[in-house]
Length: 436
Image (cartoon, rainbow, N blue to C red; front, top):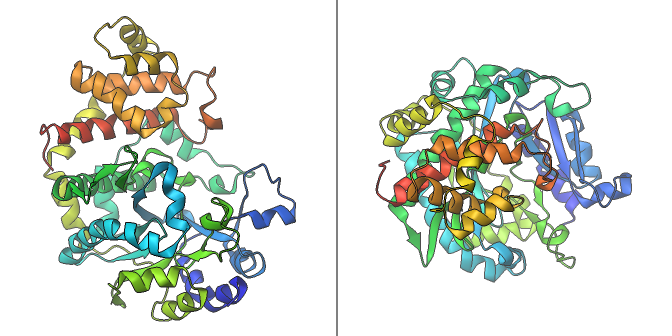
């Protein structure tokens, strides 16, 4: 089966995945022949009506925006994976080798499924070559939407970013309503709670610890980094999409594209779980088998039901929730104030001093961010807000490149607060100073 034949077969399912979307993002080297710069960003953002052309004619990977039509829905993009850092290519090199590592990620997958299933929460779980996603829509007018809105928080720079609309940036054509922004933030905090519970209760499997946001060389990574960005910049690869990292990132040109595969759907109309790991991975590597596997699913991503509120309630009873509220209410510091303090603080270790003098790209890298926050907050008594302001000031210093980050699209204060808040919570948990 060719890629075009596969996409033709599963198109009705993919179309259902985009029910609440107003655009589709297509990505892939195939855009070069359409005039894209081979050294540039190989993505196109187009109206949802172009979905069929992007997949059937051009064979692109396709991604769903988190913010739906009129900001009436917000897609929960929970994400987890095996992290092998410089050896990630091994997951795309050989199917049997991939199965060896997938045994580790399945421990986290089964933990998350159990958490959701016991509460009767509606969700979709799809698997990627390195991990998986839990997806569900949160819809305006529901109890879940209102409760997530209540636990969210928006910085002033993020409120301004959401209010901005652009005729030349399709992702920002309609802006983001403030209440949908609060819901996206609430989802990020709920996801953080879930990740920390997994980290506490699973600890590690076969030498691979649970980490938050890829902070170790080799780990079972619960990746919550999406929650540090603006919602209009967040997308998720669609279930059933081709997955081309093997050929287009890791140079396995002799292979076919891989496929993202559904494992579980729980909703009012579907109740399907496939637990055979080896079969699911076989589907990833075989377009014909993937097409047959897809026939039992509708492709509809569930809308969150009220059962999710029980998980929100658990979060609100946790010490993590109290920490989040305390952080949100803490006062900010003026520009340069904390850097001046840190530069004269002889207690700080050499790694931290090196970051202060050479912050770019260290302050984009989770391992170094966690190291910095450990030294500042845990070892030397800086407040989490002080750490956040230090990182913010570096992000706002235009002498650094920050890998080309556009801080008008990715608000710097929001990003800095996310890293300081996230790794303070992780470190408090690791040191037995916070319970979840």
